[in-house]
Image 1: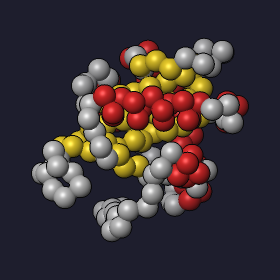
Image 2: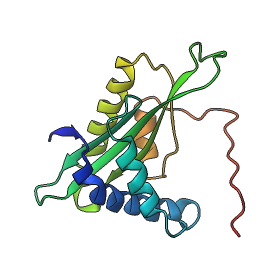
Image 3: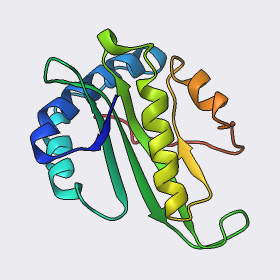
Length: 155
């Protein structure tokens, strides 16, 4: 298994994997909205190669992507527990169903956490599906009080 940085050529596959994740997340929360795929592809195109973004993938033997994960470094004001104001956020961790239970998710998580460590990032947040939660907890992720999220009502 080889992990590599995503390229522009991977964007259709990254959108496909994000659709798989969106469907899985809907089982835990609510159905995804329609029409996000083009905006997602546009933003991936714009952000690939940014210093504060890592888009990591594992190729499947058939030429598709087996798995992916995205890491961001965000900046906010420093404070307790965040002395330089930088924190990481992982999203889009997805393994296509035929490739699950082979360690791909853990391999990408390991690579993302190494990427954060190389940048001196000491806090990483994420939102997990119920399927992915055991992996993150085994890595040391915990629930953090007082995490709450507000979402604008849909028209």
